Length: 88
Image (cartoon, rainbow, N blue to C red; front, side, top):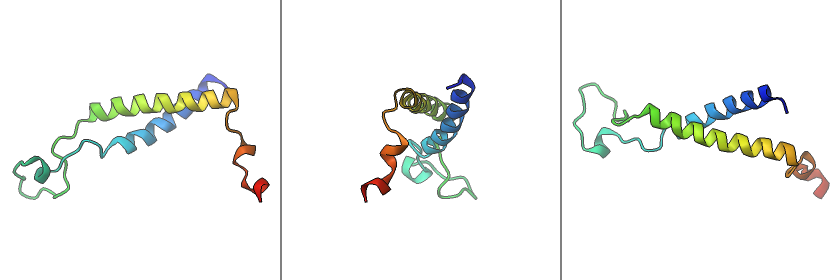
């Protein structure tokens, strides 16, 4: 596998992981016990930390991309393993 393919796969996995990590660790004003600003939505986060989301997404994407590249190299799970028509 080319290194450019690995970088492209990593980027795609990273974007998905970043969206997956967004809701974790976030509290609303009601959950945190903080007064709301007039006009603030009830679901608005109080403690959003983008650096933490980026770090978590980077680590998770590196692990998942590493697993994908290892599976590509060692052929642990192949297309034939996923073909359910062979079992019918």
